[in-house]
Image (cartoon, rainbow, N blue to C red; front, side, top):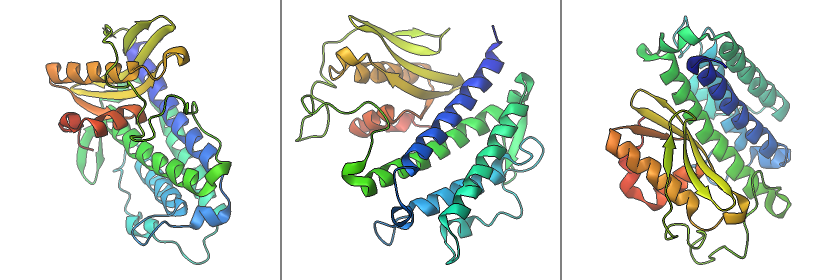
Length: 275
């Protein structure tokens, strides 16, 4: 059985991989016109988000342990501009190269590296802190890609997760009925497995997390399909957030369900760790 530090590196690597897979599956559903389209003058196109993420990955993870994460040759502002000659193929090639740099750096990490200090613009952070910040940053942009791709794909969109049930959907609020007002069930913090757990008649409902110091990254919420729409996911998230308050933790809401819960319950917004 791997030691906790090595297991943590593996988990973080898998979460980066899942984010790339999510973005790639969304990108595969749009044509070039959608790739370069913008919703309004203040919005970025998917092409721009792809270019920015590629530049970010190359800068942050080239010589990750030994050089500053903001490379001297990086021109961040230009990542939000597209030259007339830039094609989708060229931008996607940069995208792939950026992810290769990331995964090469992750594979090179050892358990002892997690506590080492790296810098970004001269500001120090542990390797673990830097990885969690990067994962949070990239997941936010992946969410943008998915949202825009879904918008432009329209009726042809193929869902990337479990489809919503129109029977349980409240058309007035866009929130599943009962999500926040279901019968309360016991939630346990299984620290050994790094997850909050709830026993249901259909199996275990879980909220997975990663913790380092006073930061807790809430990674993934999963409820058995047979008991979806009964508010169990919301109870898991609430229990995790209340537990974080009790222990003085700050959270990194990597899970989209957690972010949606906080948006509906802004009293928990102060828990979110600053990037």
